[in-house]
Image (cartoon, rainbow, N blue to C red; front, side, top):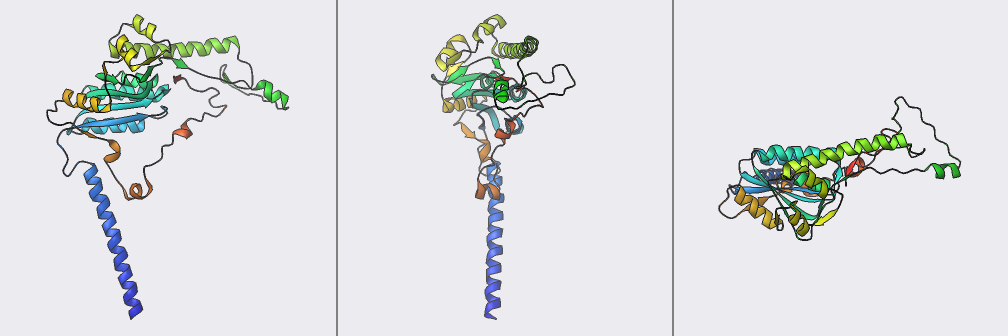
Length: 295
């Protein structure tokens, strides 16, 4: 009897603990979503960090803030040296769409260069620190040729292809003048897209933008002088500025995506790890060359 009572007591205790954890998770989730004790008017902060290899998380956060009536303005905090062209263009497009409904301020951190600056250009206002590294407006593709090395170790590689340029950029053969001309034309097209988007968003004549877009890195102070940045200020300054642009008259409160939702797994295991590294792998031969990067 004593043994059965002990097991019953343990089972009840375990069930009570699980119930408590589950209830805690629900309450934390509701708190994170702003359902209890949430300020009415806030500024939403979206963080863009590291190499740009995927756009889904940032787009999801922007859309959430756009549809949240308590979010009066948005700050995109950028610490990125650039990255793949596709994700940068997707995020910029979303920034431009959200901007039609809510004010957006771009806050440039340590580095907001190339694709990072490209995204910032879609904001209503760009703020940077005096020493922020920004600019670096250009497009790059890099290749390696290991043909000499493979011959030294006695390896031979053969390509079977259907399509004239299918193996362009292969590391196992020299690049022909025709290959180079083809790839340069491709890069020039991407570069022109970069220039035209920046010129349009920053209201800078295309000819002047082309002079600024030679891959040069500017400090935040220099960028302000040439019109790439509007104001000097840190992240709190950007949050305050965004709040005023959004019509907040009292104290400006900021909310971050990582505080918006909780789960039991996250409580015990921490934030989910991004799969950025896997997206950096582009195995040969499909495709044979690395995609262009805003860098």
